Length: 69
Image (cartoon, rainbow, N blue to C red; front, side, top):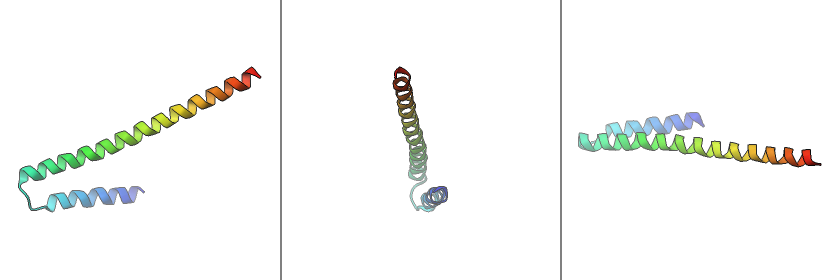
């Protein structure tokens, strides 16, 4: 998975760098590309954290039920 991600990021960056467009457009596309990568990591971490909270709440609820019995 990490190898595929690294290859996708590398090849996209290389493609953007080799693109024959105005330097201002190239800089804009590179900034957008970096923001997209950053947003993807932030979203993945947020989803992971939300899942962890849900699991922890379920464990607490199960422990309370077991304690009441």
